[in-house]
Image 1 (tube, rainbow, N blue to C red):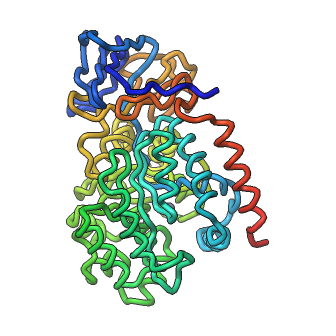
Image 2 (image 1 turned 90 degrees about the vertical axis):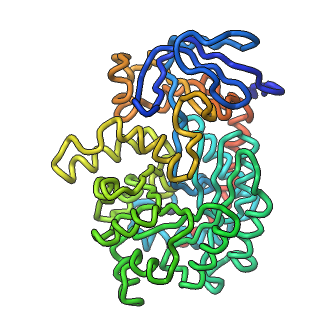
Image 3 (image 1 turned 45 degrees about the vertical axis):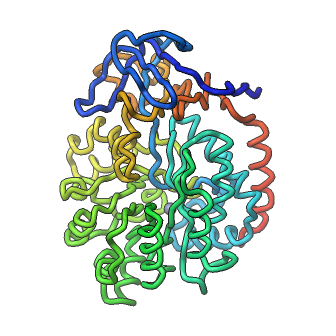
Length: 440
Ligand SMILES: [Zn+2]
């Protein structure tokens, strides 16, 4: 059933909910939220009701929307297409199928991926792909917030029509200034980008005031091959060629030396930690999240694509991120539940350069979800345990409603602005064509 979209969202009050504020004191308190014109105007006891639609918040925790700091959302129809193989074999299949994609099936895939994210409480995502105009249209139609990176690589290696860097520039020019869409440039990685491509991407990011997003040091093989080719490990090499300096976010950052960790922190490179993808593709190592954070780097959390995860749920990603760090270090105290929720909210906001996202505070953009406290995975629904439940136990089906800019995009576990059965049948049709193109 399609739920009609209110023509213009007026003030909303969520009354008497358990507010997981993620403010500086990380306060959890019972109280009200008032939202006007896309922002919180009241967070705390008894908000004014004048002119507002009042939503009964007592059965819910109100939680900042999750920020997925690295994904390829349009790959939804490719879930399961290249399981159980390591990165090089995985990429071989993916590149062969990717080369066959059309703008139409990218849009269908993006709609399915965005639906999955909204229904699991994600309100912002950072994407790396091509045909990003199709993904931008999917973002607009479903009401999520998209940070969309047009993938660039060396012209002789791409299947894109035209030069990737020119395509990225055109994409940024077309979408810059959009309220929900932040276009950006995204060099794919050192294995397909030479120094000219990296510098062109940096200059494009600087001249347009946009972010630069890229894959970095995901596998040992990538690091060793780059070292054999250039004499330097990827981070050292990027520093030498003068790439750092624009606002940037690196995905993965698994295989780093102490020197590289310091370089990333010094250049304020945000890190998108993607533990599920690293584990499933058997990257072997575990990203040095603790060392990165203590060196001063800001870390967020990403799911990567459904071809390598195979979920877009940030609830699952927090859970995995915590377990893998604790186990690898023989130390149950590292990456606490609170720190995991920080990665998924304020950490993501910081690496995107968006201090107006990630918390429930007056003046912030009203991106949040209402999580059912009566769900079995949230028992006992005690205020002092809610952060632990979010990080370690909550299921996606506990997410009841989701708001972006104060506008409802999910209510009672249904998409507000689109019909899931239509999204699903378009994604299945896209999958039919793509799966038949996979190499045997
Ligand atoms: Zn990726």
